[in-house]
Length: 383
Image 1: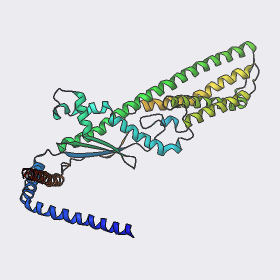
Image 2: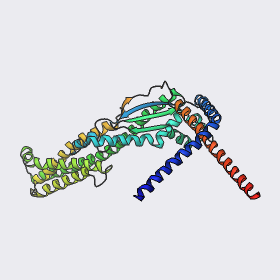
Image 3: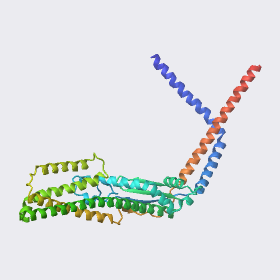
Image 4: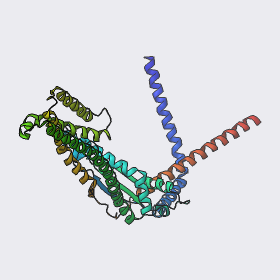
């Protein structure tokens, strides 16, 4: 019971303190009302004027997205035409689409892209870089651009500039730079793939010529007649298996250049190669006669049937000059500036004026209280 009474008295004390504080504050505010009103009006007027004087920045936006058909090498890779038949590729379209978008973000944020834009629009002069430093101009450009990966896997390119025309031109040029750099990387990768497959084709052709010469010498020395139809019927399955092995080896060789060793698709390819090797090991030798030699010829021919189309496709990819990105929206010249926001500037100024006046009043009242306290103590001591 006593605790409840104590609690009640404490609540009354607190409410009384609040009332006393309000009674003390209100007269002070009334006494300083002119300062409060004038500071509010002056700072608000200054904020309004400042909102018209501050430089206006315009925002232009362009948007792009990766092509729909992407492989695990990403949008910068060109092996998709070669590797679309790899198991698991068709199931990874969604993930590879997102990987392609992230590759585009990496290209846009690269120093190469930034430097191309700086040089194109002479941003060292536009940003008034005092010592003509490319690094400072690039940092200023990074502060004035935003690259955002949207939920729908497309990228928006936002460029802020004081000139609305230049803002739109810079946003569109970022799109061109993205395509130019991506196409260059794509062509370089296609070139590497073409050289890899070309080397394998030359090796197989040399092996085929050697096998044909060996078979010819054997037949002539032993005066043996070999029916191609009969030999093909018995050895065709073996040749097909070797052809499949050649294709899988090329696919694994291309993927090993870009994927990590523990990638599931690469591991699946290696597992298939081990299974093919196991089946080939079970095939009995056909003696040392003409059938064995003809089998070598047939195997090399089947391997070339697989490798040559892949080589031609890699040559097509290497010569590709069409854009590698899809442009959803080109930038438009903004009609209204993006910032500063007049309402925000005026609102912040008005609040700052009120806070300044209240801070001044509190400090002044505190000084007056201290002065009165010192005066009373001095008077008390003298009497």
